[in-house]
Image 1: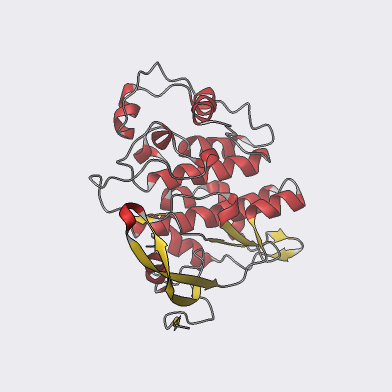
Image 2 (image 1 turned 30 degrees about the horizontal axis):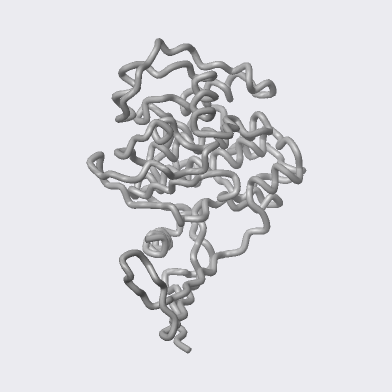
Length: 301
């Protein structure tokens, strides 16, 4: 499924989605893989070659310490733009986290990568296993065992990354599933009965409290207000897409007088903003390498 999704995304050339350049497959006809019920399958190894990026967002945060507010805005805007593109095409990534966000810190470019857990989810009737997404970034409906979720779980993960950059530490660092849920409840309060129904789970609930911002000390009011609209229990109410991207919090990214490391921001333009708030109906400038004719090599010894 990963390769099919990558090849579909390749054709759209979205600048915040990693591009698959080559696919190598090698067959081993003399070697078999033993599975359940004594069924044997021919062993085939596949290697995927992607465009090069020097670091991921986790490595950037670890190496450079707390990111500047401008860098946080730059990376988060691109992350939510990429996620909105995936959701529009019914692609549920199911493992958005800093380690899966490729970054060129010099230019400020960010791309979503690692689609090994991704799935096409078209409607609410689709059932999927709930044990997906790295725990720190797992939406509450997954923690509570929902199997009828949609791409809104990725919105939650993006919000967790946003909070992590603001806090310079994992926002919900639960060591177990139960502790993870407790940390979420500590900030959001208990989900209401309506929230529980929207998450398609069953659980006893108490009255919900207000969003607590005291765990993120360095963020300003505008950042916290935006984050509070993403990290909500009701999946469909999680702010994303054009409504998130056009928020005034990000306005300085598109101000021609804004300087990042003494230079204008070159990875974003007014055209990017216009395309993004229009839902990327007309995709931004594609990468130089034309991957629509991606080479697929099958090597048989």
